[in-house]
Image (cartoon, rainbow, N blue to C red; front, top):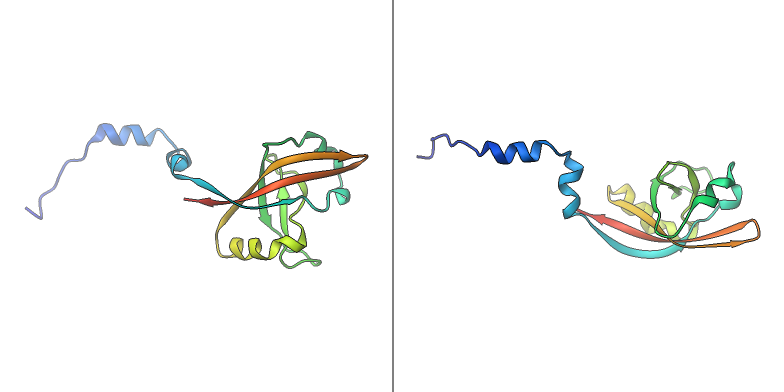
Length: 130
């Protein structure tokens, strides 16, 4: 009996084949809130108009960056992959270690305050747990 072939249910396979792997694992993904911070370096952007579109609830992309000023630099991008700034240097040590170890981190805009031409954008940082 151990060497017998068994036929699998083809109807189940056809249901699964119509989705991409990302869609299949979405229900299994949890975001674990790690820390609240803000976006640093917003006054040094080449195109500060990108900040006008940022609103609470927006999902943000975190990406490690080779940076001569900070070896632990973590770049913050919007969903269109436009640069918004960085995780502040005072906050990035643990997050850079997690990312370097292969962990997936993301951020979400929590607040936006405009003070003259300065934008203070509060963010929550999350560990994506699969």
